[in-house]
Image (cartoon, rainbow, N blue to C red; front, side):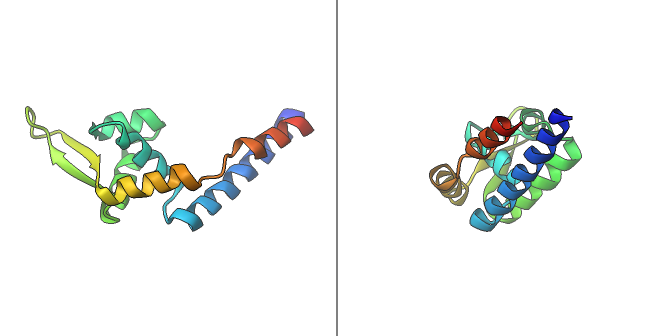
Length: 117
């Protein structure tokens, strides 16, 4: 039963973190993870979906959302025009830097959970 209670508490911490993250930065955690993934280099949607364990459908919705917010741009592949690649805009880079600077570590909240269970 302790594992089940710990998972419940972890879920609560993650939900609270996600709400605070959205209120602070105006994007969801999934959008933040996609931006973080794109920061590494130009990537395609299947690389993004694989890196953060999303379905292609979910990934496409998140990509469209952050593209509409002006945080990423898309470009056609040079060798294969069917492939689309994504990179951060200056606004996306600025937001990611802000996230890295201002995000509160979730590990402190999780540590308390594991100490209590």
